[in-house]
Length: 220
Image 1 (tube, rainbow, N blue to C red):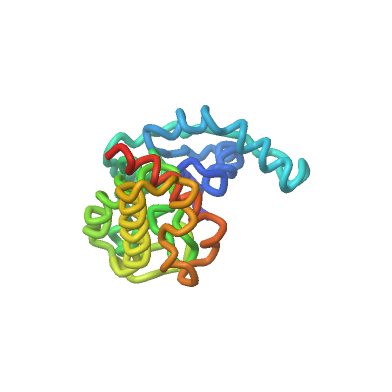
Image 2: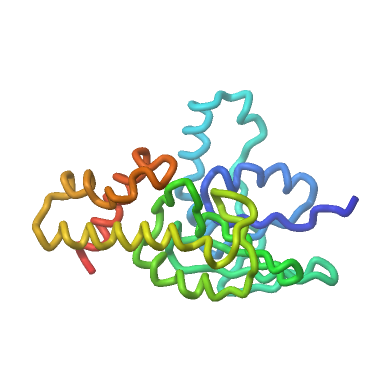
């Protein structure tokens, strides 16, 4: 078997980074967005505390917050030994530390949480940034995508359609609420309501997304 030389973190959330310590122990180089170390410093202790409360100490044994040793400022070609991966750091979207990986040999894009399918996308970065970068994301010449959440693989760029629709509707509804003078506490209850039934976990995360969108859009 070939050794694992690199572990690539697509962003800061626990389901992406809680395995870092295990891969560090076998000598893998951890790779991430230039903003990832700062994000982990700010939130890492909270993530550990939250998950220890939720799943217990036994399941969290050995889990540490480990920052990447190799940082991507914009684009980076990672040589696996005759096989190149194209890494790209994005501006704020799902988070402010999103990273994608494109494998030209198989024409596969590993999009991290810049692509959600089926489960509602969650905002922890910038709604406007996510929307502005979708065309550039769609322009990556992949045939298929591995989304952060959803069926694997999926056709590219068709996989972006649902997410783009949701965010455009959310932005429209929040802008209308702001123009109408609707208070935030009321606006978030109805924003993107037409999308209910189209996404798993809609009722868990839509109001949170709408709150973040309102805070961003009222100052645009």
